[in-house]
Amino acid sequence: MDRQRTMQTKFLMHVTGGTPYNGASMRKAHSRMRLTDEHFNVVLSTLAAALRECGVADVHIAQIAAVAETTRDDVLGRTPATDE
Image 1 (cartoon, rainbow, N blue to C red):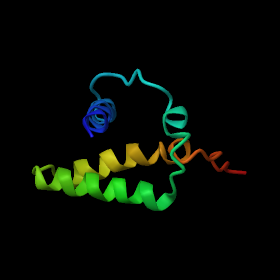
Image 2 (tube, helix red, strand yellow; image 1 turned 90 degrees about the horizontal axis):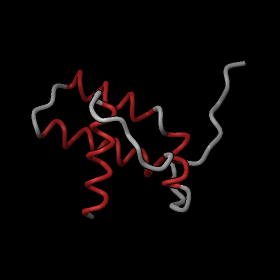
Image 3 (cartoon, rainbow, N blue to C red; image 1 turned 135 degrees about the vertical axis):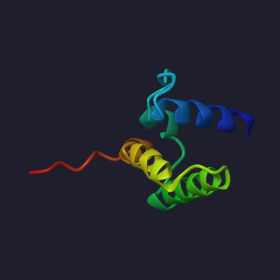
Image 4 (tube, rainbow, N blue to C red; image 1 turned 135 degrees about the horizontal axis):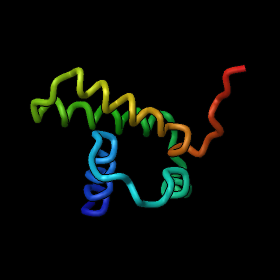
C-alpha cells in the first residue's frame, strides 16, 4: 500500500502542475493488472471523495478528474478512439 500511495502522490503532483511524472508509462505500469472501466471509475470516485473530504473545491476536483480521465485508455491498455 505504501508504494500505491507514493505512485498516487506522484500522479497527483504531476496532474496539478507540480513535478513531472518520470515513472513507467501508464500503459506499461498497468499492463499486467487486467483493469476494467469499473476499476478506473472506482479509483476516480474514491479520489474525488478523498479530495472533497480534504476540502478541495469541486471545480478543482473536476479538473483533476479530467486530467486523470486522459489516462484511461493507457491504464486499461486500449487503443484510443479516433475522431474520423
